[in-house]
Picture 1 (spheres, rainbow, N blue to C red):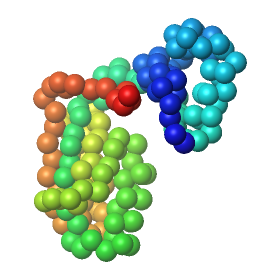
Picture 2 (cartoon, rainbow, N blue to C red; picture 1 turned 180 degrees about the vertical axis):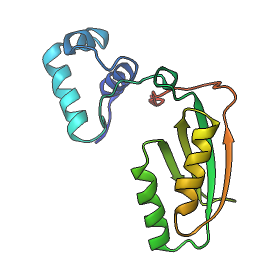
Picture 3 (cartoon, rainbow, N blue to C red; picture 1 turned 90 degrees about the horizontal axis):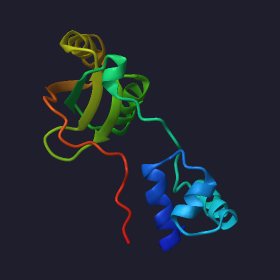
Picture 4 (cartoon, rainbow, N blue to C red; picture 1 turned 45 degrees about the horizontal axis):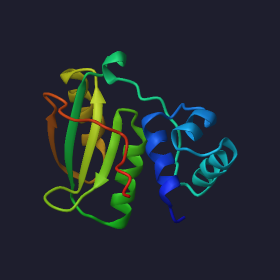
Length: 154
């Protein structure tokens, strides 16, 4: 789907204010409600808008520790990668998982309650995955920047 300037304005507004009514969104982008709704529906149908969510502060759920784990596998076979990725998708603590270039095969971000929870996750979960050769973890001391809205190019 090719995005025009109006689509970009819609995406910018909805990334900031996902619960805007169609009437309010239309007013913000200077478009009447009916064509505004049609454009939003088209953005949803094309998959440009993936979903709408509520962003919950981890601390509100007692998940105050954000951890980044570098994982290296023994071998990078197609099956080994697929198995590891499948396991990562199954863990609620895992927020993001990326196949990487460089020194490690994967970068995993998870949220846990505390150091003990992190230790349990590493010992009971990560180290039991076949093919995991090396694990290096670091936890965030301070969140300097966090955002969910993507930059919408002009």
